[in-house]
Amino acid sequence: MDEQVLNPLYEKVIDGLMEQKYCIADNFFSKEEVLALRASLQAKYEADRFKKSAIGNQANEKVIGAIRGDFILWLDESNADAAESRFFAKLNDFTAYLNRTCFMGINEKEFHYAVYPEGTFYKRHLDTFQNDSRRKLSIVCYLNDEDWKPEYGGELTIYTEEAGSEKAIDIYPVQGRMVVFESQVLEHEVKPVKKERMSITGWLKTRG
Image 1 (cartoon, rainbow, N blue to C red):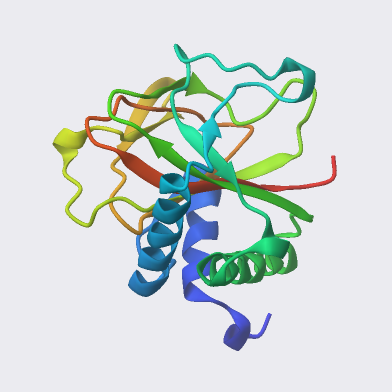
Image 2 (image 1 turned 30 degrees about the vertical axis):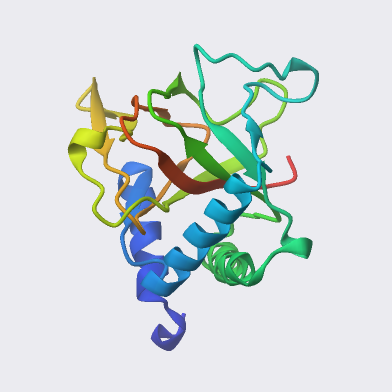
């Protein structure tokens, strides 16, 4: 492949996925893009457009607060505002790059805003369903306050295997940070939050 077509930022994400099945990218979206998404989320949350999240899918979907406590709003690319349109445009470019360089066959995506009120969490789980294995990559971009501190909690804990033993990786949800990981491989959880935690979260999917 001609070196001129390589995207260093995308290659960093791919390298992380290949080496450890996850990647942390703190500069995938610009500061302006992150703040615009944050403003969009806040406006829609204040307009009471979010709903309590559920676990499972289709007929198996249930709202269980003891497992998951966030509120979500699914995004529709065909009805996106300006901030969301820029978000989808960049993800579409990234997806095309993945398909071209890694032959991943991704042809669908689904994303939602997520707000974790103080005291909520999401217990350890895998981002795939027993009756649906289309999710391949999980993506989360944090839209929190700029001064997010470790004592606020809400870290994403990813469980990996190293030298035959389990290792827990804590990733703090600082503003603008994006995390990408393999949906069908890495179990993870959101630790209890002590301050409202905001993100845009979703999945890149194949047909089957």
